[in-house]
Amino acid sequence: MTNPPPISAFAAIVAALMISACAQAPAREVPAQPAPEAKPRERVEPLPNQELTGQILYQALLAEIAGQRGNFGLSASAYLDLARTTRDPRIARRAAEISLHGRNLEMALQAARLWVEIDPESPQARQMLAGLLVSANRLDELQPHVAKLLAQEGETLKDGLLRLNRLFARHPDKKAVLAIVEQLTLPYVGMAEAHFARAQAALNAAEVRRGVVEADKALGLRPDWDLAVMLKAQLQRMDSPETATETLRAYLTGHPKAREVRLQYARSLVGARKFPQARTEFQRLLVDFPGNADVIYAVAVLSMQLADWSAAEENFKKLLGQDFAERDTVRLYLGQIAEEGKRFEEALRWYEEVLPGEQHMAAQLRIAQLLAKQGKLEEGRRHLHEARKAGQGDAIQYLLAESQLLRDAGKTGEAFELLDNSLKEQPEQPELLYESALLAEKLGHHDVLEAYLRKLIRIKPEHAHAYNALGYSFAERNQRLAEAEQLIVKALQLSPDDPFIIDSMGWVLYRKGDSAGALTHLQRAFSIRPDPEIAAHLGEVLWALGRRDEARKTWQEAVKANPDNAVLAEVIKRFSP
Image 1 (cartoon, one colour):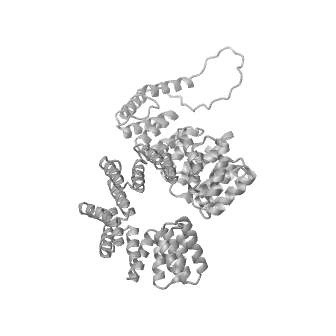
Image 2 (cartoon, helix red, strand yellow):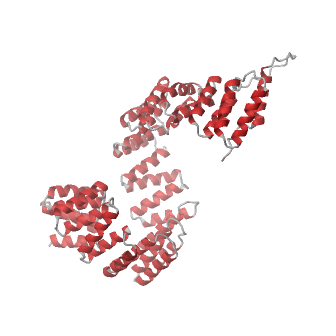
Image 3 (cartoon, one colour):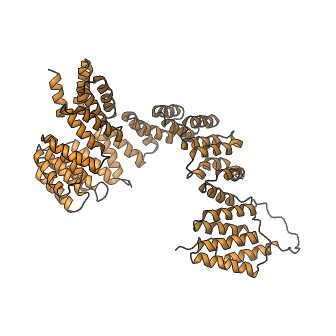
């Protein structure tokens, strides 16, 4: 059991009472002295003219000893009674603190109300009471206390308005909070900060239009306020990311040195997958933040996304010379860049430098894949065995990685046998069931595929990809199409934005003769992820609809990005003599 907060001990409480008694005694006359230079007077608490009686001493002693022994209920109750008797604000505060420490919200409220009653000008008393009223969901009682706190802010009123929403951060009814924030800020509508507070509350309540209106009012009063335009964009992003991005772009036209706004704009371009423009913005930020690790990292990752390997490598290496938290992630990326440049020995060195931690397993898998890519399949498998034996990560993931090495080497049968043997030891392991099912299909074992996927669905009824794989298998073989559609519909219910499941729905509709419906799904899937197999399906449906030029263009662009994809090559060969 922990002790109560060390705000005061018994001796301090007694001393406080004695001092307050002395403070109220008549002062004897003293000779006049020259007046000192005027200084801002600190607020004086309204201390009572209280004689230290035996009863008071007993109650203070009881309260303090009870608190030290962990009996916070008795301690808080004794202090609260003592505060009512003495009308001493310090004892009321102590009662509130002990009640809070003992998690007695109702008694803490009583003590805080008494504290405010005794010392109505105390900001600390009202702050505590306001926080307790929010916790107790008593917004109706809260408003006058917060209004008083704002009125007491004086020269710091702007900061007080900006802090206003923090008071309600934990309150669940965000629309009720918006209403009270609007009422509290009525006296201050000539201040940009009041409208900013309203916009923040509207954001929390998902009231986008009201929030944008208030953000615009704040900007009308303070046109150069970076924080307000970023809040406006944050609100707009809930309805239209494109509009939010345009808001930031337009503001930067007139405020090119607004660094935080540019940072948010760059991130919004990444979210819109406009990688070249995003990298340009981050590169501009590098001029202002030349040593900022986060900006350097963003430029490096975007350069990698754009296949600008030299720029990516240069910036990643800069990070290794700094105190950057994700150094192992950087080493992993540098290994991939070296692989891309066919510098395999260098890539291996980067992967081997990844320390135990979050990226360590990924590095071990890359080492095995790289060895296999160099024709050292057995060496790659041995590396996985050793890492698995050493307990350097998830054993199942090492097993699946080894299976993938065999599959990539054209040894699909061995890959299936590896996983199937492991299933005998772990017959209900979901990942083994799923991957074994996919390999079974590659080998033409459709009965095994169906048995494993149905078992997986029984074990994990929310496994969207199990429904999708079974449904797609039926559609691909042009069998049991009604059942295939039902399975894929279920998969979409579980994962409505998965491009591969959307592709499966398009494919089953095409098999059923609904080419127009198929096209809608396939175009959506391809817009989310331009995968070569989705491109193959999309081109075939376009061809069936007589839109052959569009089909050829879709295939040609996909081939440029994925020259070695077998599914894409087969479809092009079949339709383009």
